Image 1 (cartoon, rainbow, N blue to C red):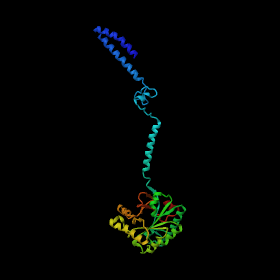
Image 2: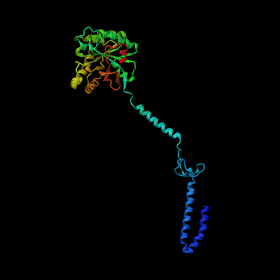
Image 3: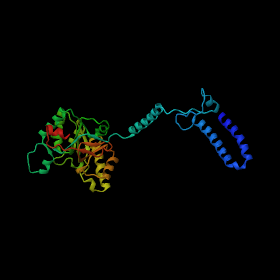
Image 4: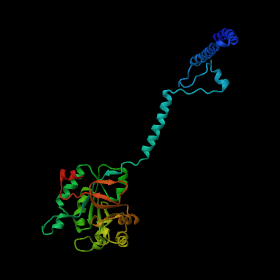
Length: 326
């Protein structure tokens, strides 16, 4: 400021002289420009010598002990330090954890369900279809021994909904379709001997006919702790090829008739021929079945759909080849 005062006073005298000599008008203009430049330089010097805040964006007032902040009610800006960044990171991490926790767990689990039809000693080679559906009794016994030795625990199909939640790694399920007489004469004694559970699927109208279980045998089996009885419809039709009303009769009436006969709940179902469609699957659910088995191959089960369980055909495999299927 002193420099500005000195210069303006020094040139004021010359300005008066210039007014007295109009010919020197150019000199007057030059002097005016010099004064303007000097004053501008003083202003920029003050601006550039003020301290800046940490963001480098606006000049911060020169204060001591934060007095200017109190007088002008200015709140100090929060510095961008690591602590604030870490707080934001924690929020993001928590949000991500919540999203992960809200996602459904893997919906596919490993649960081997074995499918049998006939279990008997083959004495004739004339019925090739029956042979293709038969597991020899001696091989079946070897399979039961292998399961016990490998540490497997057997369950009923009725246990599947809970197994799909708990995901028991050494669980195995044995199922027997159609309700043949050999289930009573050959299979059950071996199940009892090796303490292995089995689920038999009964065709209601096949009861008391040749090669099938009798009603009295079924009543007896319903009291056996190693046996579960399930429905395999009234007449074993292809459910995917009949009208929904007929499917309702086959699925619902078979359950009611079996429950009346054995005086025990029938909770699971087997699709005849493994044939099904969306309508038949919905009907199975509507009639209160908690699980249903198909003939789809494999040991991987969908946790969200116990009404479409996959099964394995062990046939006459034994020992390592049998365990390898599981």
